[in-house]
Image 1: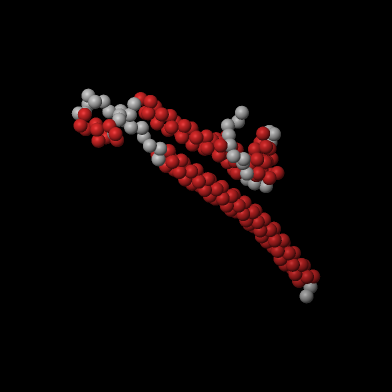
Image 2 (image 1 turned 90 degrees about the horizontal axis):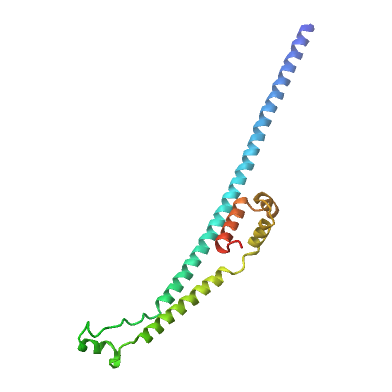
Length: 182
């Protein structure tokens, strides 16, 4: 065993160490990429969950509004229509008598009073709906709107309140449709 044998063994040792170092760097890069992809996937899942929650909340609000509107329309439809004026020239007197109890025809005053009752009922329903639109916002919405009115960007608000920029955009959009900026 001469010096060539030791030099060859040293050469093989250095070669094996180089291969191990190169493999470590390659696998470290793969691990880093895998970790980055896992983090991105987690962020996407969180965003998706947040979006699903916002959509569920929106559908709940829409269903409540629809039910409220249907109740108000039903209430409005229960208000009796004014009787139609019947002209004696259009029908023989014998046909008119059974239509009006006691033989009395509605006069213009009765018809306008009935229309006034409908108008008042409609205005009351409209005011009730308007009052609900002016109801206070949830505290989280108030914070978002307050920070937006201070001139903060969506990114700053999202970072401060730990919610997504899409949620902020949705809240501000809903606020603009319900309560126009003065």
